[in-house]
Amino acid sequence: MAEARAQNGPAAAAAEEIWIKCPGCREIAFRKEIERNLNVCPKCGFHHRLTVEQRLAITVDRGSWREMFAEVAIGDPLGFVDTRPYPQRMEQARRASGRNDAVLAGLAKIEGHRAALALMDFQFMGGSMGVVVGEKIARLMDYALARRIPVIVFAASGGARMQEGALSLMQMAKVASAIARLREARVPYISILGDPTTGGVAASFASLGDLNLAEPGATIGFAGRRVIEQTTNQQLPDDFQTAEFLMAHGMLDAIVPRHKLRYTLGRLLTALRPPRLSPAISGRSRRAKT
Amino acid sequence: MEHQEEAAELSPAEIERRLETVARNLAAEKSAGARRKLAAERKHLEAALRARLSPIDRVRAARNPARPQTLDYIEALIGDFIELHGDRRYGDDGAIIAGMGWFRGGPAAIVGHQRGRSTVERLRRNFGKPFPEGYRKAARIFDLASRFNLPVITFIDTQGAEPGIGAEQRGQSEAIAASLEAMARIEAPVIACVIGEGGSGGALAIGVGNVVLMQENACYSVITPEGCAAILWREAGPEKVADAARALKLTAADLLALGVIDEVVPEPPGGAHREPAAAIAAVGAAIERHLRRLRKLAPAALRQARGRKFAAIGAPFLSGGVEKRARIK
Ligand SMILES: [Zn+2]
Image (cartoon, each protein chain N blue to C red):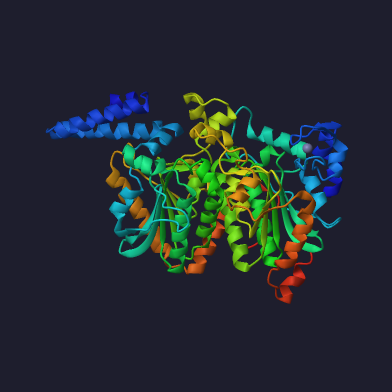
């Protein structure tokens, strides 16, 4: 399902440009060549962003993906209007992405290991977290908890979604509570902080993995760079709020280059095994209900 | 009574000025008849003020420095308070007060933001904006309370967590996230009270309660109205900020309707800053009432109930297979 979408979705629209300039080395490169290289610059190793479909395609075993909770959607709880009404903004994002909100959830196999997977879509309103994002991730975690399946979340988000107000904020607590339940049951949860991961997403589930991993160069932080520049008068270091900055300050377990991520996840899923369930329950878990 | 119609046309600031005059006259007046008249006028003015307060007026009331702060609540409601300092990692954050004391005769753990009033205190407390070490201190107290089954009372009053180089270096995101998880795990009653400004993740980090109380003029929001206006309208003039405050639905009444909070605690007429003692007493009575109920639940049941409560937030606004949600244990 997702593989079919990968050919027709936003990736296809973006692929119209044949040449792209690499922000890492400033060289002009053939887009196809970069794409063949997992969207990593062959010259300097700069990690270009991936669409959710691209990410899925390079992460999970072929044919193993089963989407869940695809129909969960929200209306306009606050009646929010800024320069445009919220429902109009949502309609546009839905049409462009082909999904209801900024996260994709489901079951897959990675290097033969079953995993419950959520992938945030930064192209959908900046990957902002409203009720649907919180709900789908929390529900995926509870589903995985009941069946003792490891959870992996690829975060990519500017933070909580303003247009759903405090309801968005509360999703931080909703997902943190689900993680507390996973932790207690010793079901592993791996967080991969993508480019970018900031605000309320960084300050909740993205930072709560049993392991927190990131790709090279990803922007990760709590407050926006501009806010910090305005409120402090300090000169910000060059690598401020990069994955490398976080690792240097002890906040990341590892920075994993994209070429090694799938293999690394496979090894980690081999090592971190959730406790076995009683046969009655594990029998039921073979069929994925959506 | 002519002042009735008149009051409806006044701005909140004008009503406040009139209220002050009436209060002065009332204090000086001896005749019973005149006093009755003044008291009636005060009642009408107070009602008009309540009706006229816009969301941005309430944000201003929530930020009023004369409003009672966490240490005022502790002073009035908590006996034998023992403040507990530090995160045992890096330092002791001034913006978060943590400790143990006695509430209505029983031991309890207390955590709250403290903004401070004097310039010296404000600086020492970083204007109530916690650094990561503040959240790590809070999480330490949450774990302690859970292990010894102490009820937890939190007081929320912050513009938000500190944004800055030091905060980022020491993991502000992780500190807030870990505090959220620590609260989710507490096997004891947790009552969170929004007593001023509930600013985003820095507020919620100590707000994961079985019950979330909110004072009438407090506000609680995903972003400040100023920040919201700057991002959505690219300008932060007073008009756009007021629009943002309205759009964000950050008042206690709105949040009760949205299911984000559980109860609105009324404030004395004109706001908590006018009669701090009465405002504090009303919050204390609400905490006591909920605590009496929550104490009857088993520790594990309290943790589960909290998980279910936050799992349900926002669910009424969803469509598409919401009914299938698994039961939370
Ligand atoms: Zn390059």
